[in-house]
Length: 111
Image 1 (tube, rainbow, N blue to C red):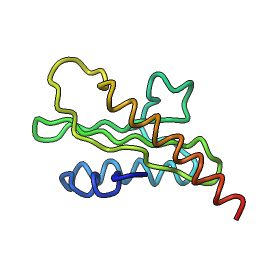
Image 2: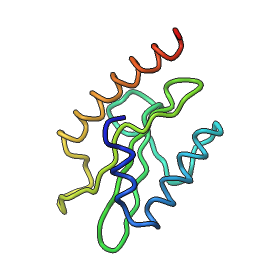
Image 3: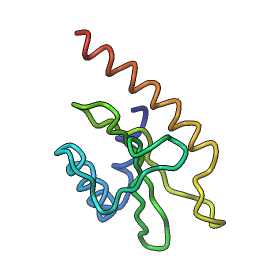
Image 4: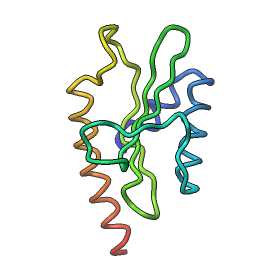
């Protein structure tokens, strides 16, 4: 959704590999050891992959809320050095793109 594909492609190759494996596992119906539920989204249908590389932290958020699709909602490099908490503006973007994913999925189902 949005710029997520381009954002992931801008990450270092090692980070892209971790995210790619996690997404492949999700597409196959599993959950990668690198993925964990993103707090505040009511369960385990919105997950994040966190990878530290070369002193930086990278995150990719995706949803498995829809039975036949995995949507990458957001990918970003965490800038803040304070705490592990995901910044509010990033969570707001995830919520917005989750709504977009629901609309896209509904349109796909309806043909």
